[in-house]
Amino acid sequence: MAAPRPAGRTSGVLGVLAAALALGVAELTAALVGRPEAGPLLAVGSAVIDLSPAWLKDFAVRTFGTADKPVLLLTLAAATVAGSAAVGTAASRRPRSAIAALAGLAALAGAAALSRPRAGPIHVLPAAVGAAGSTFALLYGRRPPRLRREGRITLGDLARHGRREGCSTLGDLARHGRPVPRTAPAADRRTLLTRGAVLLGAAVLTGGTGRAITSARQASADGRALVLPPPADPARPLPPGVGARVPGLGPFTTPNDSFYRVDTALIVPRVPHQEWTLRIHGLVDRPVELDLADVLARPLTERDITLTCVSNEVGGPYAGNARWLGVDLAALLREAGIQAGADQVLSRSADGWSASTALDAVLDGRDALLAVAMNGAPLPPAHGFPARMIVPGLYGYVSATKWVTDLKLTRFADERAYWTRRGWAERAPIKTASRIEVPKPFAEVPAGPVAVAGTAWAQHRGIAAVEVRVDDGPWLRAGLAASGGPDTWRQWRMTWQATPGRHRLQVRATDAGGDVQTAERVPPIPAGATGRHTVLVTVT
Ligand SMILES: Nc1nc2c(c(=O)[nH]1)N[C@H]1C(S)=C(S)[C@@H](COP(=O)(O)O)O[C@H]1N2
Ligand SMILES: [Mo]
Image (cartoon, rainbow, N blue to C red; front, side, top):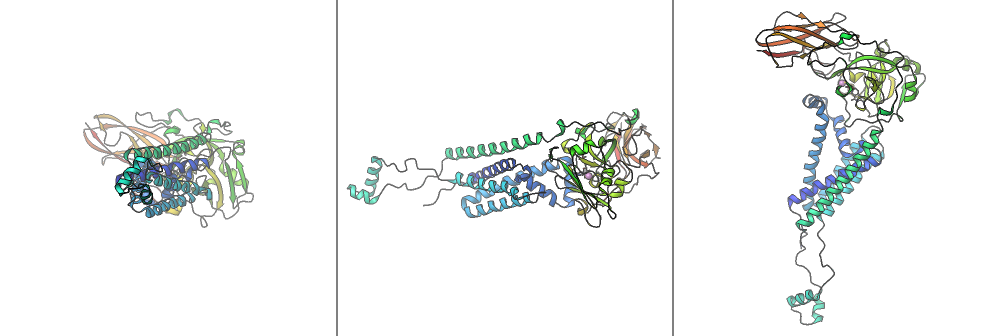
């Protein structure tokens, strides 16, 4: 007698439900043990990010921009659905291979969780519980229905059975035993639906509870409760004309919620400020460990500094300007006693990322900060709460470690950091750049006077001039907005007497040292893109 088999489609659905339950109970487990990063989706996603080659990351950032992370999670979710449907289908024919596949998937998720920074044995628990959950779901979904009258045989049954078997006496009947149904009925539609609903409900309940626990915990890890002391060394007030005031041009100071975000973290790391510490060690005379109270007890410096990402394409959006509040990073390191031979500050974050910063840049008198606030508020979680580095003039990947917890004085020859291991330059001063923000590419503008405006930056050198060229005409000087200092970007504008037809606008900046931005086109990798931003417009 063959075991009842759910039809192919039903098996596939059962597989998906088993995966959903696995993810739900794994998420709940991860939340209960306080390790949300060990949940299978996040763990595998983060491992994928860390393992993917530079070109793939580059492609993802270029194609999806800041949506690259949701796209990755959706891709993983889709792969999970497809994979679990396949496992479910296999389970109806070859249960052993299905169980082997499940064990393999769980091992993969466990390994991914173990690859997270500071992972311990507890990180494999969500995957293990998830595997148990999906095994249970598969067995439960495929269990044949119980015979309704099992063990309770009526006299009518006996009589019918006896007649069929040709029994004439009760003795004959006893010898033939109890009636056996010829086929075990497959679970009917209603049973399947009920079981599906039970599994789905359990998945949603466990997963939802897990998410709720995690987000409740995370809500306590932001800066709303944090009171910041006023700066001992406040920023110079911004001159009234730092904004070029052209409709369509962004503000001089970028609000926190529209500041670009670039990092490798799949979920924003939440570091409760009560638990945060910063260790300074390596080639120092006196290793120290500070907590946030120690940091806030020091004199705070406030500065306007423009941060730029090395991945920014010519004309791209990965630059932002904010007013940062923090402690003098050079003073902090000097207090620890910098030893001869050190040439690199290797900073690490709570999420295991690292950056290597040239020590001479930190010590040369620029306003390198261990920042705790951005535009008058504690750092938003996405921008490094409770503390991050900011070093004017260096691209973010070699200077701007968010959620920083560890500073090691070391040597470029001895240790490399996250992106420098992946082929990006060891030292990466920000290159002079300029972009046209108004008019937008392919805009249609009326003939006559047209405002052309944008931003230029050459952090820590400053911008001395911006020029614009129409088609192959002469370079024309744009008007510069007031300067916020050498470490900030500078807005510019000019009025163009536009004539009908299609035109090409180009921009170039000159830094305060007199160096003109190069026209040579190079890609972001390894040390930042160059080339002239060009915008095509139609004048009607
Ligand atoms: N922990 C951590 N810090 C990080 C990164 C990261 O991936 N992880 N990315 C760096 C890069 S490449 C840049 S450009 C800046 C961006 O800072 P923002 O997200 O606050 O704009 O953060 C830097 N700090
Ligand atoms: Mo970056």
